Image (tube, rainbow, N blue to C red; front, side, top):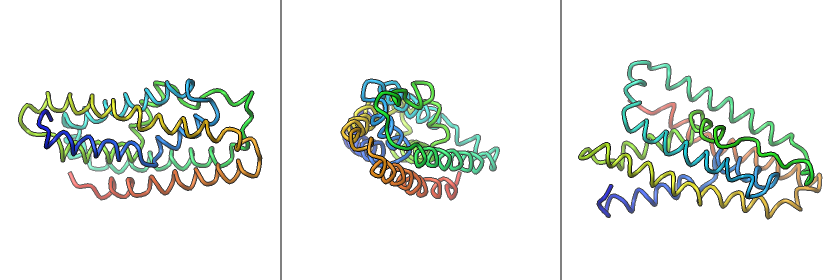
Length: 205
């Protein structure tokens, strides 16, 4: 990871994977709209911490557990899919924004970090990056550097979605527009998750 030809592709991969629509960014967008940027910081920080930690653990050999317990991998995928569907339903039925009431973020630091373990896109990111970008030489050192970089990149790439959410706050006080936004975000959340779930379900170990 200290070599530029390896580092740059990894950073590009990290930016694309953490910055594009997915469960994390959908949650942060809604959180930003309902609670503001400052109150979204714990959630964003938790996501970054969780992504980096998950990547490090996977890189250290969690794949061996999947080999030993084949059904464990599919169980995680089913659990993650179920939670995403529940989250999508909650967003779709959340109603218009009440500026003086909806100020509490749905997840904080611990919740954001823990969510990564049932987030199919986070699993796909960690598995792909750990298998593709981490050199065998000095594996632990390279893995530590990569995990720190991934967590650092995640903060601005995910945090910008909270800013976008704030920009939509006034719009979301209108019932019809709020309903359209909530349903649209639920659909995006599901569509953004399906490819990662399929990839995890067909991943070979």
